[in-house]
Image 1 (cartoon, rainbow, N blue to C red):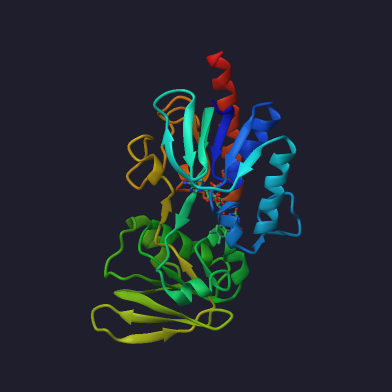
Image 2: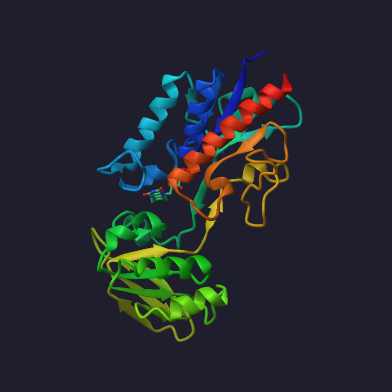
Length: 307
Ligand code: FAD
């Protein structure tokens, strides 16, 4: 029979590594199944300037390497593979990757979420060079710039309004003639003199070689195109939590975010969730790390209660 770990952590973003650090320091045997995106979303970014403790800022990948090493220092084992199946019907729990089955007394799900993108090659090429999906993270880099925000829900209104703190002007591009956003958010955005709206419009290309210089926009009703000169493009068309694996097993909301039932514990006792996979609101490294800490403390107490 294979080893039974104290806890298996699925995911290696700030939530997973922080859960691993806390669990390992409380003397549990810890296995982190890191997934193929080892280090999580911050591996896609350059400067992180809002994580406390790094007064000069730090590169995302460098910060995640520090998280990983800190958890390893206390004995957490790491395997950089995706989990392809879970069996939470009996204990110990069984978690499967391509290399085999792993067993544990508790599990933390920290599989994060992925921003939705338009899927344009130009958008992908200019990610981190003016294209972003996080106004809170990157707004500060766009002082006095002209920006486009894409989307029509509350998030788009909120991000457009937030970005006017830095930007010279924000054009909100939406592919329909009405917004999904709540009236209060729409009113706030439309009263803001720095925001204008392009309705019935979709971005067909992000322009620029090494940095964004504009977007090409097509009117979906007339087919007319125009170029809007901007230095930044913010996607606000939603996020997709990485929970397909847990469908029908773990309680989620309609979008797929895990809904814990007691603190960080899910509807399956002994299975906990932390970070962006449970959070459609804050979506920050610091909140994900905080959640990882909460999950580890919750699972330590739960394991103790199991004797
Ligand atoms: P994630 O970081 O999303 O990690 C999820 C992990 O789960 C990954 O390791 C992945 O490999 C793993 N995984 C997924 N599926 C499986 C599976 N089936 N099996 C095993 N593992 C799996 N936040 C800030 O605070 N400051 C910033 O400056 C900032 N900049 C950002 C820039 C960009 C470009 C992006 C995309 C995000 C940025 N964020 C920033 C947000 C921040 O990255 C996230 O809030 C944070 O990473 C969430 O952490 P997490 O641990 O919940 O999940």
